[in-house]
Length: 182
Image (cartoon, rainbow, N blue to C red; front, side, top):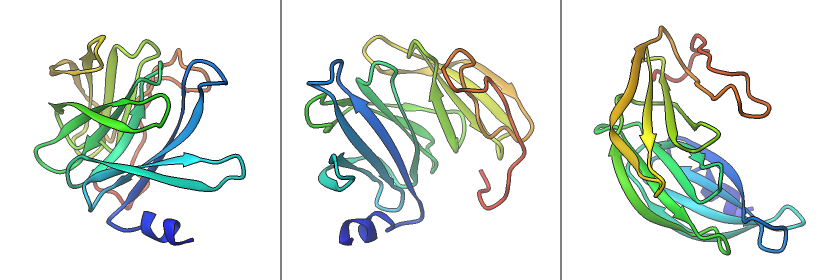
């Protein structure tokens, strides 16, 4: 229970679960928690009984929040919502789930939501406070290009997804439901 108390420390906690590995023998379930106030990401391994085993922590920046894992499960992308707005990219160790810092690239705005297309070649961002959506190219090495491929005004955009992803609803925006100003 102490682990769960520690998870809630900070302004916000965002959890992201990733199945890493290409075969069941190599696959593990890893849970990534963005510790917004601490400015880092905790790594946990999910056990068969539902218990979490704490791993390491990877440095990021204050107010690190939205996260996305590449479709091939090789990279974790973490958006920073404090200035200068950026995305931290980490390589994921397929055996342990450990994160190794790879790169940091600027983003156009404070994005409460980021995602990748099904190929992992483009990073999408949506900001309702900034009233925009953006697309940045992603290289084969997982690094996000500093220059945007596309930026469009979008009143109150809060989420953007690739329509070809399974169980996804496509590119969309919606009004803020309150509580988060951007």
